[in-house]
Image (tube, rainbow, N blue to C red; front, side, top):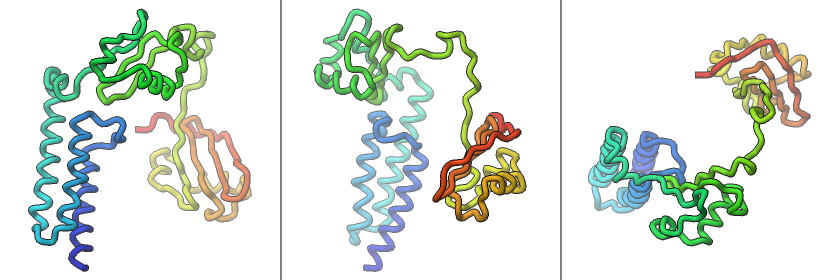
Length: 239
């Protein structure tokens, strides 16, 4: 029993490390070669955990081999447009101003129902709304709506909205995130001043406190309503 626990623990951490260095893309965003490697990794990882007759090294070597292949393919796709086209394919326009491109659908092994489902998933329910629809190399659908169908934006009204901001957590579940205080150049004294204004007596009362890059301090207690202060601090651009 103990040997199974040890082998499983070692394999888990090795696989965890491998997936971390491979990147952070979600399954639906993987290129075909990345998905293939991920599926094989999942299968190979069970061998050193279950097969005690197989040495741990012999079980781990295939995992490391696949990671090496992954980095070689990734390197080639970065350095060569030709290799990128072969490895990842290229985006395919399946709807253009002339309508649905039936031949392209056949190349992708898609039918009209598949296309309608993908369009609904992207928030479009009629073909008249769409100028272009493109199947990306990872299988995702990108849509460019017709000019009259796209959402209005500030440019249409010649407005100049405030610059977009980013919220940074200063307290989570009653614990101060000191690294973020340092990043935004905020002192604990500053933080406690506003907590006092919000009538917060102890940190454990807090669920979340964030400071946006425009100086807005958001305080969410665990058992009370949200409180917001506009401070004089400007976090600027986070790096």
